[in-house]
Image 1 (cartoon, rainbow, N blue to C red):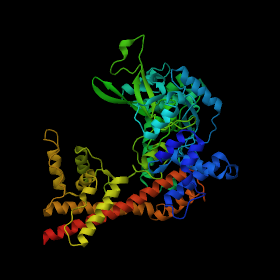
Image 2: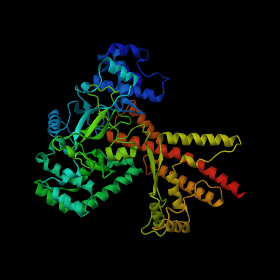
Image 3: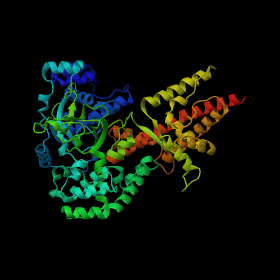
Image 4: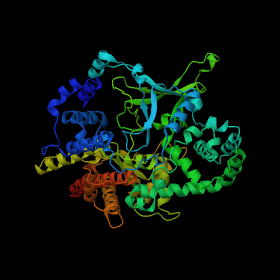
Length: 604
């Protein structure tokens, strides 16, 4: 893939065709791996949509385009561009955004000091999770190395400093400072913040809600008109869409968060109505407006680092323009805070001062940015659960995916005498009543280790333990829930204020009967939790078997079926969760058998 990126970056069609001539095929061969065949079909469908029927293109030209699409769209184990499917809905919503509205937005940003000469906002072509994307403009060539030396440098992956593709002054961004300095609603927001009725995140959400209600009278109107009216995230799902998430963690989490937001709105509703009216809005705010603002803020804000008094801290901000950057696991761009020199007040560029701070979008010079290329960033190493809940999309092959398991086993009753001390002990350890089982390399190593130990035992040789393949935090959580009440009380006393540290450490593998008994109880609980999770997802109240989900995904990948963006994202998310449950249940069962054997040997 790196070689294809390099040779196609030269834009010399003849040379590129010659270089890949040996790879051209009219279609996927029977011997290809399933993933490669799916990639070819996805790229083929993408070219059909973008360039028209294949009859319009010569065979070699069309095959070359397929390879170019694959080379530029395949990152890590996921496909960005080629994974678009016919009939999908965009996360940005279906409202048409005219070019005039985009041009007005770009002019508005430039008037506020943004450097946008090398970028443009276009309908997204690479990512299935957005309707608009920040893309390279023709002027990007002037900021990137070009010509034969640039091509050779990219081919050899010669290191060079990143260059600034775009820059956004923080003063033109939505921050707590800009919200509280607003003449109309700033004093009211500052008052709610000072009295502790809301926090800084809520300040941004409420200010965003008020600006939305002001409509064209808002200073932020050129940006707001490009935002979706109905974000395609679980908090906005219809009853039919919710059926795709039965038995998942998101199903419970979204309901709980929506209830929490409703309760919060009830406490601040009257104050919000009062100062929204003072701002001049003709419409009174409602919970739906508050929910919209919270959702937009959660999907578009970044946390900017700043140094205050020698200590690093972060503050939340939405940077209009930068918020149109989409996500890929291995991006060619990233955002960084910087300070531009100020001639009038040279002494103001000091630690903690953000008045001249800019958010720069910097790009890797080794990756060619032709006009129209999306300037993607990474939203972080996030699981599909986080991506779907916060941004409204899932990645089909996400190495950062994880399975969240909540404790305890039984639904706690109010003021449960046995549960409350355990929760307090967990808090004293800095833990929550939940843990995560990872995907990717960690799962692969766990399965390999389990197979290796099984082979050793089959040969009658000594083998180690599988305990180490699980996250250490998981064992700490489980052991708190299975230890005797007397032990919980003892450790609470040791971890109370005035005592030394956390008290005794939670036993690890241990060889005596007591430690083995505790380990067996924790391992048994883990197996039971995973079994319950599998029933929740694949049982009568769930969404069916993993095999059925895989079949639907394969049909969609081959172009045999179409579905909405929200359904596709839910399907990918839940299928991966079912896969993780099965894989970790297998490893957990083997570990439990190992502990039982060791305990039996110790008793004998």
